[in-house]
Amino acid sequence: DAGVTQSPTHLIKTRGQHVTLRCSPISGHKSVSWYQQVLGQGPQFIFQYYEKEERGRGNFPDRFSARQFPNYSSELNVNALLLGDSALYLCASSRRPGGNQPQHFGDGTRLSIL
Amino acid sequence: DQQVKQNSPSLSVQEGRISILNCDYTNSMFDYFLWYKKYPAEGPTFLISISSIKDKNEDGRFTVFLNKSAKHLSLHIVPSQPGDSAVYFCAASGDGGTSYGKLTFGQGTILTVHP
Image (cartoon, rainbow over all chains, first blue to last red; front, side):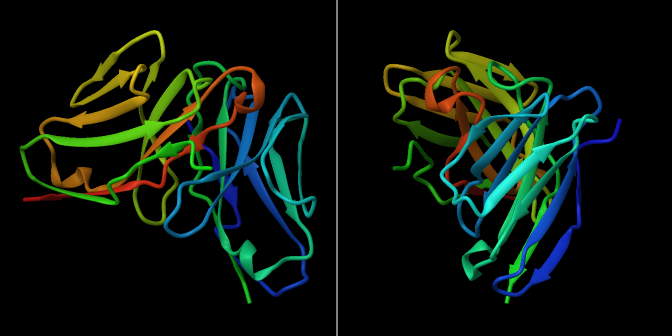
């Protein structure tokens, strides 16, 4: 079975632009979460979606938004990009949110802001 | 506010010996703990988890121990193999409150296993 797939794998943008990152969960998984990982740190939680509804939000500005589609895939949008948004963006899926549910990660999108 | 801490940035071990990676947490609402392994240019790979109702969980060469009173968990890898060389992340989650559904990660420990 295919794992979590993310696109694109790499992206270069300039300050002020916006970006859309995409994620397809593992088949049968209805919950998708987004994380940001900067160099030398662990992933930081951005959003969690389940059944197309936002179920959790981390400490990120309103420039960050996301949505989940009927097929459970998801998009992460970031507006007005800043240099500090340069990071690895990871998507994870699980059958449902919360509880003893391991989240399984994709390989991420490496976003570089110039 | 670092709720999950891995105080050892790196660990070097000889092949065949035991690797012990440690993790401390502060949030008493956490009730589910996980370990992930990450190779460069790949996403984190789920290794093993433990619920707060247990104090040990074993899967092959990997064993996770949980000490709730000390808010401490550890991952034991026996025997260590060169292919185990990677960054290891400890993560925690809990139902309810502000930690529902999200994973809170430590900073990671770089494990190097020498042949």
